[in-house]
Amino acid sequence: MKPDSLAVRDYLQGLQDGIVATLEDFDGQPFRTDAWQRPEGGEGITRVIEGGNFFERGGVNFSHVFGSKLPPSASANRPELAGSGFEAMGVSLVLHPRNPWCPTVHMNVRFFIARPQDEAAEPTWWFGGGMDLTPYYGFEDDARHFHATCKQAVAFFGPALHPRFKDWCDRYFHLKHRNEARGVGGLFFDDFNELGFANSFALTRSVGDAFLKAYLPIIERRRDTPYGERERDFQAYRRGRYVEFNLVFDRGTLFGLQSGGRTESILMSLPPEVKWRYDWQPEPGSAEARLYTDFLPVRDWV
Image 1 (cartoon, rainbow, N blue to C red):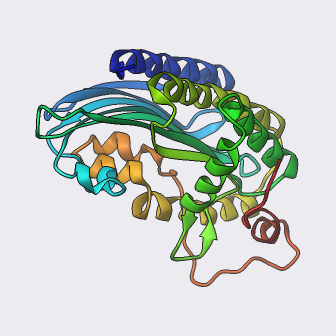
Image 2 (image 1 turned 90 degrees about the vertical axis):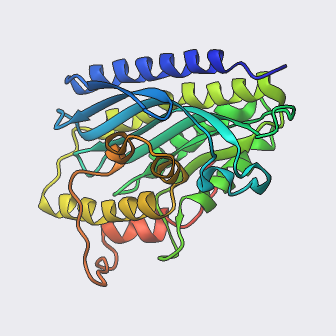
Image 3 (image 1 turned 90 degrees about the horizontal axis):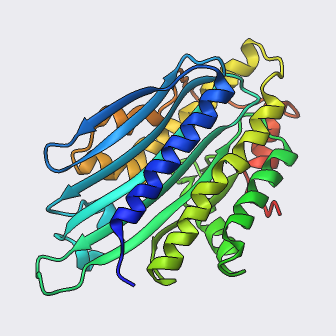
């Protein structure tokens, strides 16, 4: 079956609409909508909330862009495609709650087509995506629920996929310069076409559709937990790790910047308030220390 980019686009736009509608109901404030055009080819819709009742900042973005040369971040694992034209589309979201007891979350599903300069050659296509959870104060039931939902999302497509995608996520969302995980992981996959177009697309849809089931129950049970300056201060410190990862390692951020994407949309993933400290260490035995000892080390949560 040949790839059907129109079907993928229709799904992605519906996914963005459905997630935003649910999050608006949860927060009680509307998202701002910015539709934009890319001069080099393509368009997108950025949906952002700032200063909401619950979300301090959040964005759910759709983009569909074209280019004459695949950026290095997209061809890193496929050097034979360097110099190819490309078509890329996806939905990417990051949500930063104000309450430090509620975790930050990221989800992305995307589709690429690389078209070689030789018009007689067949295009190469692949899907990518996943989701990961970044708590500031860890709860085992939250981590188990999130990972169990991720596992269920890919279970239909074979028992080998979840451990593979979970391990991929643990390795991908790792800050090499600090030898530290960004959060508790989830699942991640890229350059994926091994099931054929129909089943690879179905798997990607299953991951996208699982996001609200994975995240909403967590923030529903944590949203009213009292917090003070200590918790907000630690949240701002840990958000610094999020910034470091997104600006140094994240392939989506790098692809967007290298392909001349819309900077406001690309960098909406960054948290609004962040702190860095020199050689700070949590107090032994504290709730902050437990994040490092009990949650950031790689675990099999399910």
